[in-house]
Image (cartoon, rainbow, N blue to C red; front, side, top):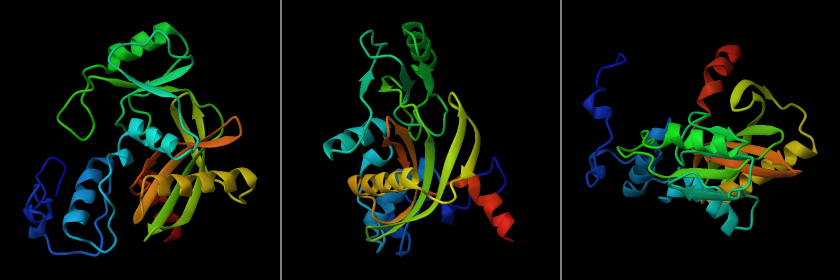
Length: 240
């Protein structure tokens, strides 16, 4: 329907406990971050052939890096904090543990920057829920070439569909360019992505994973278990 109107009732996901009101499907995919938990729930309850386990680390940036750490993979030093920490190594990044793109992400190079980031983010709406950001995520700042990797997974087998290299200024994205030709760095980035997808037990569906090559070690920043929405329309238009 038009923006601002309720969608047709038959397209609205059923509430908890009434999943079987939908007909059984082969897979349940989420188009955006807001629907990730719902897609996991429906896929599990409907016993969909190409479903994934329910795992909040695919949606929470803090839990993701804790999982990467448990699996012995490159990860960010991090902390959840209710107030600005005065002992966390600078520079750092302050952001909500749930978020999309660079929204609510602050690069902090001084204690004053950290204080200001907390003042702006504390009490803001938490993505995907009715709660507020009462605690914030503080992470070590990764600096280096940044990539976005689109992948498609089926029964635990991962295929890389596209590799994009970001042009950024701070947290502002200026452009994304296809990384043609591969090379050792791109190969290492793709390997880091498939290891991370295994670590979060993401076996089926599309994913869009962001990686920074920091100190020559590709480190996954976040893995979004959904389509890479930003580049789909222009690619389709160019192909048509």
